[in-house]
Length: 312
Image (cartoon, rainbow, N blue to C red; front, side):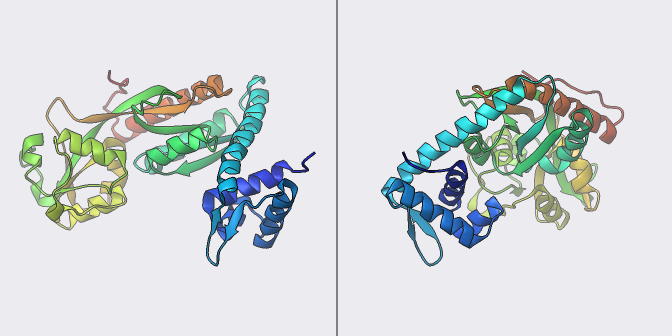
């Protein structure tokens, strides 16, 4: 009988993910020598080499690649067993791993985390902020329980729950205050500043302008909405931002903010999780907390505005 432990499998899975002993050890909260020793013991138990050790990084052997996939399946099944036990209780307890895209996280998360902690004090909340494509991958691999993203993601294996809709706002230099708001067609002729490739908000902005991509000579991509707004403040161009980001991102910038004429561009924000997740019922409860948090945040930013349901 092969003598291997779940700890060894988790260490190997981390090493397969990071392809670097130092980063894997940091992710597992152990020392690098301890991680290396556990991997060697795992290889000895299996009677096969899992990795090729290089000076700066490691590479999986052919056997290691196959083993990594099987190990992920094993660990996901173990985690789901724990989820089944948690789901059998009448309250939300234990670890909750939430993923959030960068154009939502800074604005919505503080309110959501506070409300979740108040409503479900026994939850141990872990947050992961990254792009939608990575969140979907990590959901599929069992690294996350749920994610807050822009819908739709259209993955057959994932459940989607729409939470709220928010408009896109036009951000222009301060001297443009009071001038006519350009149409989507006119916006195509302006220097439109965008988030870098990979952000779904970039694709949504391009879709509104009916553009396949930004013209190369005007490509001044940024990694955050904050950078985009500051570039507009410097007179470099114009940009679009989601409504929830307006209060935070424009308070220290010399810019003007305007709404487009109806029909206004917007996005639908929702939560996604694996359809097979034993925590589906609990995640639905959490989605209600997120929805209420977003409604409260919108009222706080604009007391005269009423909350809106997701558009269909």
